[in-house]
Image (cartoon, rainbow, N blue to C red; front, side):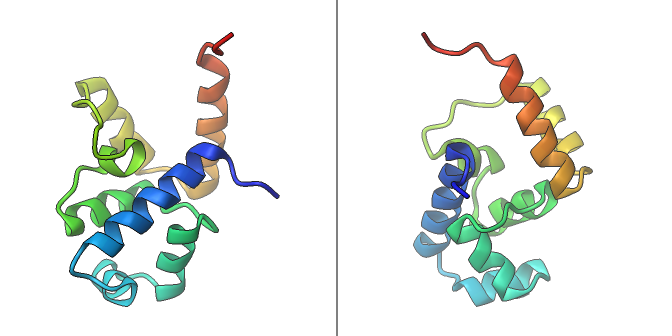
Amino acid sequence: MKLDPRLQALADQINAAIRASDYTPTEVAKQLGVDKSAVSRWMNGGRTPTMKNLVELADLLGLEARDLWEGPTAIPSTPEQRAMLEKMAKLTPTQQQAFLAMADTMVPRDT
C-alpha cells in the first residue's frame, strides 16, 4: 500500500528533524515515553504519531508542531489552526486519519 504523500512528507520531516537534533531515535523514544520502534515507524512512514506525540516531539526538538507538518518554511499558524491541532491531539490515530481524509474532500483540487 502506497503511503499518502502528506503522511510521507510528515515522515520525511520527522526523520530530518530527529537526524538534525542531538537525539538518537532511541533517546527520542525514551524522552517521549514510547517504544523505540514507534519512533522508527514515524521516521519511515510506517505509522503516524498521535497529535500529542507530534507536539511533544516538536517541543523536544525545539520546533513548532507545524514545522513537522509543513516543513521549516511554514507560515505562522492562525488561532484557528492552533485550535484544530489541540482538538486533533485528543483524537485516536484512526480518528486523525479519518479527519484528514474528510478534510481532503473539502480542499479544492488544482486543475
